[in-house]
Amino acid sequence: MNSSAPPQPCGRSWSVSEESLKRYVRFASESCIQELLSASDAGRFGNAGNGWKILSLEKDVEISKRGSGSLNAFRSRRILRSVPSQQFVAVANAIDAAKQWDSDLVEARYIKDIEENLSIVRLRFGEHSKPLFRNREFTVYERRETMEDGTLVVAVASLPKEIAAGLQPKKSNSIRGLLLQSGWVVEKLDDDSCMVTYVVQMDPAGWLPKCFVNRLNTKLVMIIDNLRKLAQASPVPLSRT
Picture (tube, rainbow, N blue to C red):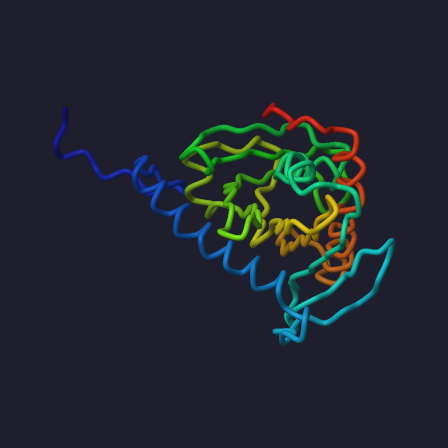
């Protein structure tokens, strides 16, 4: 081996140890969980809105927005009557949500389990997808946590691009987007009903007018209604695919 060989240039990926990856996703997902719980609670029962502004009420889904920058966060919430929380929980995950975003999802799989309730997921959309997702992929963590009162929180957000590249090299024609924060809060109510809150903030990467991105983001939060139908048709928890 030639000890005088010049150092290799730094690449755009980080090879992280299993323990370092675990520490990162634990910390990031805990922060995301707290953000989701805060978003779910804001504006209800006299609580402060914390910057959330109600935009509309469609199909019994309340649509809200927070932020004044180019990439806003959007929230939807709805009471699902006669849909037990555990039934909705079966479809409250990154893969089933992605299928509601775009029917041209070409790859959706769990690539690594970090812990029992913490996994890494890859989502890839094809060339026929909607503009927000066309030829884009997302490498995200998914963490499922049950609070002391029985509320379930599912936190989903992208890994940093450098870490994602080390785990899963992107396809040659794909753009790696960023799911800045997203996820579910499912609260059990009486009479086999539940309150469902979904939050999403996304940077699709690549050039898209920001107003166009925000307009499509508002459509994403309507997936509660689609997943409600899926939950009602799937009483048995779905297995990972």
